[in-house]
Image (cartoon, rainbow, N blue to C red):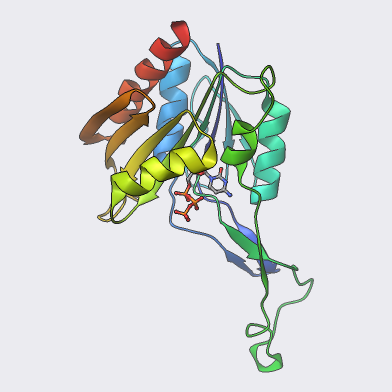
Length: 211
Ligand code: CTP
């Protein structure tokens, strides 16, 4: 079986020395890629910039921006499962300056943002045949976690959403607590180390596809 995953942050350049990004470390996505490979999946991991080593047994494709991430995911399909773990920057600078912006020239006040493509929504909307049988996303929330995550599953057209409470030190930390939301019910994993959560989630994905 084949799985394609995204992980890490995306990085959206403003000028040669500055960018927009976020605090995602990539740990949960890398751990899930490794756990799926250990179960025998052929895994492609499309990763934004992280400090992590490529997981063993996984084909890792490194990208920077959300648009590069989408293109790399499309190139890696077809797959049985697509799991979007990346913290994709929702917005990017409308233009990337070739020269370093100077604040005194209103370079920052004039910074215009445009919306990035939604990778999860794009893959979930593929025609049957092209669409992976299982499309799942993560919902990183700081409050009303389950309510937001349930709504996100429907809004994005995903089969599953893993709800992730990031109000503490989850981003960058070693531990996580996750609730899997499916059309048939909800299951909680953790609190546990991210690699243990990854092994439990990987088994659940394997079971669902083996059915
Ligand atoms: N996602 C994506 N492409 C984007 C934004 C998000 O693929 N441009 C995916 C993430 O990988 C994750 C899920 O969508 O699996 C939810 O991401 P999240 O950042 O929580 O949701 P947003 O769409 O940013 O929603 P909001 O900011 O309204 O909470």
